[in-house]
Image 1 (cartoon, rainbow, N blue to C red):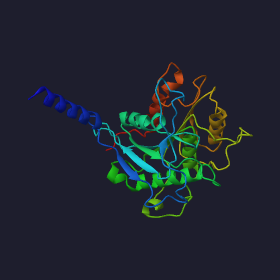
Image 2: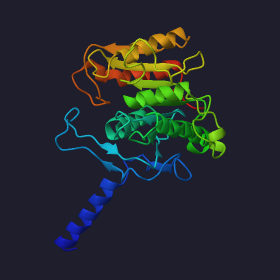
Image 3: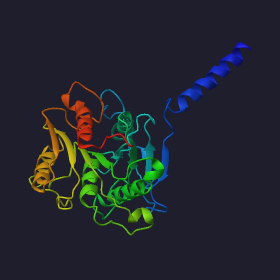
Length: 306
């Protein structure tokens, strides 16, 4: 074989190696969330795209994707290695102030971590930015409720336990996860199919540096859309005291959960700011994934499926 042919062969092989999924992992399945156009969509927000500018800050030395103009929500299913799979699943809601989605920092990287502890991760690409004349959380909550119903309805095919499906959110995605965990009694859209007749209550909830959980002008009071009672799922909450969003979101929400007979696991760190995702730095708060895994394991959500 000539040197030119050898070079071409190696180039093709290298290209294939870079594009194929890692050994032991299947290609993630992408599911269109709605059978048609999502509720209320008018197709007037422009094309979906990464809005990150070169001048914007890096997190732990790495760039991040700020996905904007999302009008076609999807679920991307990341499955763990079969030998690790424990049957649990978590719907992952990236943050971004209900304006964009931090798709890798608080999405794909989180899914990889969940896979590493045997959990099927479901990345929810929900609608942003806020639609005109709507509550900022309405379209995202429609997407989250639909996501929980679709995943639970399809649990057998996906190889997950329908009684161990949690939700996890960061920043505004934390508010969305809290909304899905407290407003599950009634869909905020008209039912379309059997998936919408399936229970959409998460079995457990993780809120990572959440925002919008308390009133801006009265931070000791929980946001009015978040209705708390004893049926709200157990929650794990992390935030830092120097978070610009306000640590009151976690503190007073946790106190309200406790008053509703839903004792949360609350971790408050002195420093670390906001928006660190899972990217490790010298700050102790970036060890939160270990604490979250311990909590999920202690609660029984990571028990090996029979």
